[in-house]
Amino acid sequence: MLALTLTADLTGVTDLLPVDTPDDPHYYNFKVQCTSCREVHPNWVGVNRHEMNEVSGSRGEANFVWRCKMCKRESTATILDAAAKYVQQSPPKAQQVIKIDCRGLEFVEFKADGEWAATGSESGTKFTGIDLDQGEWYDYDEKVGEEVSIKDVKWAISRA
Image (tube, rainbow, N blue to C red):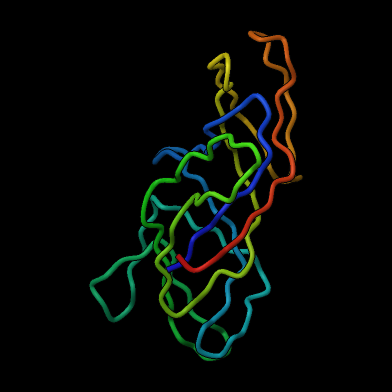
């Protein structure tokens, strides 16, 4: 079981989470490593919690089914729940975003692609289209007349 955690300095916003609906799924992008031969796949792989794939030789399904090119072992990963909101804290603390059940593989690196959303902490203004790819985001909350930001974005993958 792995957890993707986020640490970020939120100013003027809270409840940060990925935009993730069945019609517009959020893809979590990872580098994957086989736990059998320890080979790291060179390409990024996208996993979304709404897509289910059949596991060969089984009646089970998983969000991500992968066969290692080196040892030919099939592995799976499933995102267990919807993403948890990242709540503004001072000082910023690591908070779990998603929990992933991994069988035969590990995710070793995360890339924040896709659209995120947040809420103005004082105004309740909804901010959408947030891109965390560069590790920071800035905007202006017109209801309170102040700049809002997300800075010092750090991602970690750890045992849950």
